[in-house]
Amino acid sequence: MFGSRPCRMSARDYTRGLLASLERKNCVTIAEWAGHSSPDRLHYLLERAVWDERELRGRLGALAVEHLGGDGVLIFDETGDLKKGRASLGAARQYTGTAGRVENAQVSTWAVWATAAGHALIDYEVYLHSEWFAEGDTRLGEAHAPGPVAKRTKDQQAAEMLRRLLAGPARPSAVSATGDEIYGNSPHLRRSLYDASLPFVLACASSTKLRTDALIEPARADELAASIPTRNWQIHAIGKDAKGLREYSWAWLDLAVAEETTGHHYLLVRRHLSTGEQDVSMSVKGWLWWVLGACRPLGRWRV
Image (cartoon, one colour):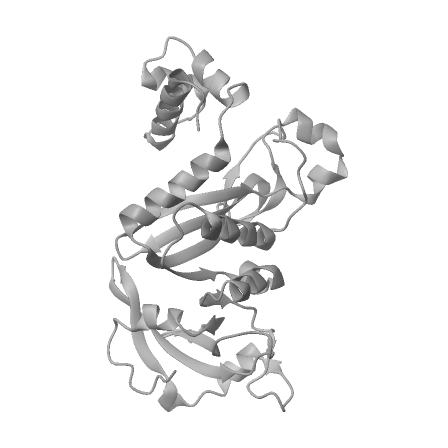
């Protein structure tokens, strides 16, 4: 991964500095915190040192699987870091959940490996807003982009990270995938999951048209959710917070799917107990047992 021991030590110090409780984190403050006489070593690491990022990602994924277990969930999500200027790769005015609004930010797509033993970030891709490609290669060169950069959406980035994990040095023994609407509405990611025969639960928009029977017209996901009889809802907890168990009502409907897809497909609905607000997801048999199986006997749930 690193061509020399000094680079490896600099990477160690830089990583520890990013995890430290510093008010501001840059090469100067991290170098001071690590006891360096100047920030030159960290500048060299980030600007000129030669090291294999792809091998590092592969080893990170292998370590996560080794220490957390090979039976888990691959979670796709994005996060944003607010920026003041335009120099950072990917920085642009775009929506970020960090601020809850459109801000000048650098947004990254993340892949997190989660098991009962814990969770770890194992892969990422910096998302490049369309304005970066509108300005040609000049801005990408100024930001030291690593070679030719293809324009990809967040869901395409997620599909590539899935491919890297499955092709990596330590493929997990059992993988399920999940993500929000960005990924649930993605034909790229769903195709990759089908091709790998992996179960998934991906959120979808309420307006998504779905079929419960191949012979009838598709209906909106929220309309299908509203048609579920009261007797078919069950309460299950998804974890604890400061107020105790976080419980929701859950139900699902069988879905009809295209012949080229595999597995049993469902519309999974989660409803808030007090407000009645609903979240809808598309799922393939397998992951639901991971979510609900340890809660209590499934009663009317059927697979």
